[in-house]
Image (cartoon, rainbow, N blue to C red):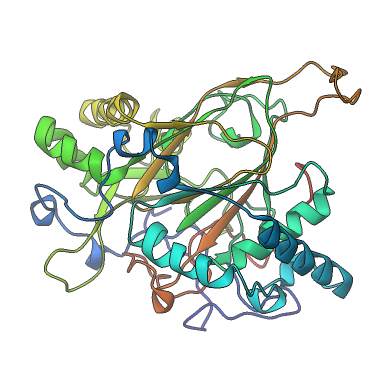
Length: 408
């Protein structure tokens, strides 16, 4: 089976699909390999990146006003009204669009945030104070997804079609990386990006300890690699990496695909932007295909193993650390921000909060993967689905989108 086998995309240029299956009218394109004609050699990459996407953690550690906003009472009332109105419509959550979720006060702020901060600026932001502790999971999910529609198009996050994901420890074995997604465990997550343009995390409940978030400017990392480890930069820019689809693919599609870690944006601009797509667990999990006499692909070589370590160490050395509280929404742009999570430990089952008398909940984050397509200001990607409304994500065949209100 060829590693370059591609997904058969719908005939629609933007991914428009059957509303009987995809209620908002668009299908997630899924895991696509890069187009060979759009993969640029290392020699085309800049020696140093400058501009608004480049930042240092020291700029933000002592200046939360630069990257956080606590929802005001009028903003919360607006969000709550939109959520209640949508819930009363009896439409499924998978049909929600920004037209279904009007935000007269916040809509312009969110549009500016998407363009100036997330896509073309530092690439991260934190909203605070969404009242999830007094809302039901249904209302919290509706408010969260409604806000998300003003930033992008939600895409499927797994083969089950989950467009509302849940980061929660389900007791799965984090060492089984060929079939277990780390967000379903309490293990540490190494610095990585998700398979979409933007990722959002809404904190519903904190853990007893750990589970804290770290982020870093990809362009800061790239500059350091070019200066301190140019051999690593070259390795990461080379088309020698294989990425595991972890069984979330259809018959006739390769269970892995080949590509780079760093890419250049697909544009004729004299200085195209550097982008990154990488999760170390998706390259170190391929032993079933790269070992033994029937190996289909080469194992990771010494230069690749070294590059993975240097990349992680560089991220760890100067990342921005944050702790998400219930009601916080963290937003990140995957193409130029890497993120990680510390390991965590939940309260033992049955642990009671002395103040409320209620059982302490387990750590729970709701997750959105949001697409920002080219025709709406998104980056020009080296993939065949770059013009799709719902580009990226994970899509298996005609699996319909679903919105579970808790982990399953």
